[in-house]
Amino acid sequence: MTTITNHLPTAELQKLDAAHHMHPFTANGELAEKGARIITRAKGVTLTDSEGNEILDAMAGLWCVNIGYGRDELADVAARQMRELPYYNTFFQTTHTPAIALAAKIAELAPGDLNHVFFAGSGSEANDTNIRMVRHYWALKGKPTKSIIISRKNAYHGSSVGSGSLGGMSAMHEQGGLPIPDIHHIDQPHWWSEGGDSNPEEFGLARAQELEKAILELGEDRVAAFIAEPVQGAGGVVIPPATYWPEIQRICDKYEILLIADEVICGFGRTGNWFGSETMGITPHIMTIAKGLSSGYAPIGGSIVCDEVAEVIGGGEFNHGYTYSGHPVAAAVALENLRILEEENVIGHVRDVAAPYLKEKWEALADHPLVGEAKIIGMMGSIALTPNKATRAAFAADAGTVGYICRERCFANNLVMRHVGDRMIISPPLVMTTEEIDLLIERATKSLDECYATLQEQDLLK
Ligand SMILES: *Cc1c(COP(=O)(O)O)cnc(C)c1O
Image 1 (cartoon, rainbow, N blue to C red):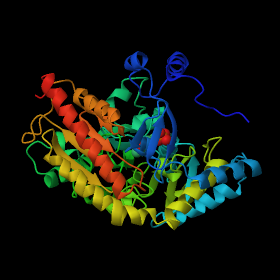
Image 2 (cartoon, rainbow, N blue to C red):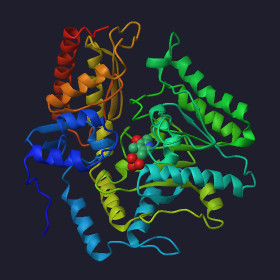
Image 3 (cartoon, rainbow, N blue to C red):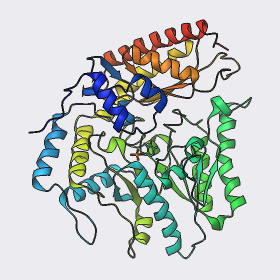
Image 4 (cartoon, rainbow, N blue to C red):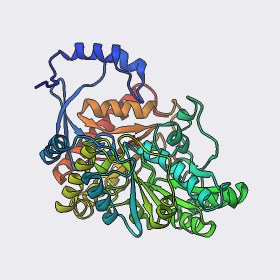
């Protein structure tokens, strides 16, 4: 049996990596200088690197390892499925048991009449499906001019040409000719950095009303859908003011705009309910899912579609699909993941134990001299680093300079905490215990202290 072991010294592996492996979303200059961090194994909430460091993973990989690492049940299911039926497609009127069972299970878990699943290999692919599906839906309804999808600046919906266009990341739009036509971006409900003198509630309402303004400007007969994450993840864990989502729902209802909730991060327990839409009290027509669907153990995503849209789309042939739509091994792994989430009451653990405990400790970080606000919902949180809490000022240094320093201190203290600009974010495995939360806070605090000292030394505290 071939096994991939850490058979070479770290420096050798890093050299090969730099020579042959092109990394996604990586500062390549810095990478070449110091070499990539090599993760060799993981168990529970802890990663081990090639130097033997044990690192607390407060990001659950990339927001996805909801049940934690090292669950043998998923490995066993994958091996069994590979032996029985490693691959077959779901095109041309065929199907297989894992895809059927997973679709039925997702339909059972999803709220309301979200009863139909179109599978993809990832969140990006699922959002590409959504672009085509909502436009095709309106065409079939005799309204082919309804093709514009409204999204938000600083949203993240994936990295393919379609999903990257839906997203509102300007750094992504700058490369490769994005966005595609008929995607329109409105402002985000990010009070800390854009709220000025308004209070969060007024601001949330005003930002939601930008959707109505956009619909009226573009024309009701031109707008197909609005897409948003219930809580923005990659944009910096931006939790919208309470006034935001009810107003968005009102506007979508009033103008008959399809609402797509991108649940790739929020779905499967992260906010303390099965779906972020439930936490926010909204009723989307389509949900994008991926990441936590399989806890990252296998690549799989999809769109959960309401009865009405599924019925219209199902009236003819939808000329769309991926070789790996409903891949049997990935579907079997996802199904086992959902079984564990349900039978071990992982979401109950989030709601009743982990999230309340983490919230208390996390919000207390706002007392740190470097931290302006500390926000958290369920198991996703962020802190804003600032030289002046009262004015919510940004640092004089380029955005991200301080965040990067803080992230490097976290790594040095065996904690994975990401930075988005000068905001630090966490999204730990949902199974995290209170002892592990204590460790997370201890390492985060130490890292913030060290970052603060570095800023003082380097005269960056301004
Ligand atoms: C990660 C993410 C995606 C893209 O998923 P991939 O599996 O990386 O393609 C889409 N939407 C949101 C909200 C995400 O966080």
